[in-house]
Amino acid sequence: MIKKIISGGQPGVEQAALDAAIKLDIPHAGWTYKGRKTEDGILPEEHNLKEIDNPSYFKRLEKNIIDAEGIVILTYGQLQIGSKSVRQLADEHKKPCLPLDLKECTLNHAISSIRKWMDNHEIGEIFFTGSKPIAAPNIYEEVILIVEGICQVEREYEKFLGFREESDPSKF
Image (cartoon, rainbow, N blue to C red; front, side, top):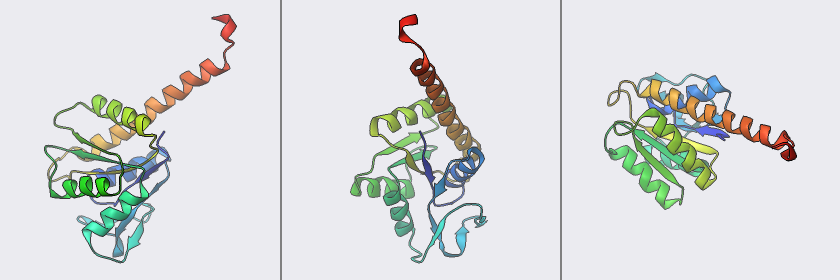
């Protein structure tokens, strides 16, 4: 189950993950730049992020990685410099990292891959990061659908388990 979404609030994957968290009432947190500056303006206050004093891109990334149990990198195409840095920092901090190229997989495949990865690594607090809209014009909408899909799978799983646990096994 997604217990918390962590994000830095940058356009694309990060803002979509935050908006999905708000829409689905999932706790969210993360670190953003001082003044809540993003590449496309000021991050709204509804996004519950802390401002980092250090303006370094890598320090912001590192704080988000440290605060997460695992990292999901959603891209269109190969990992670029920023995403490669995320992967390297995740390795340094011994955090499970799942890169997914949405050019190479369907949204359903991404949803099931993330769910399986979460289960295998017992992850509930996820730092979502990846492509920006300039590289992937539909990334915002797709990330919303992916987070919604993960939560739908969780609800169905809980419903199934709840049904099985409440039922009298002698009646089967």
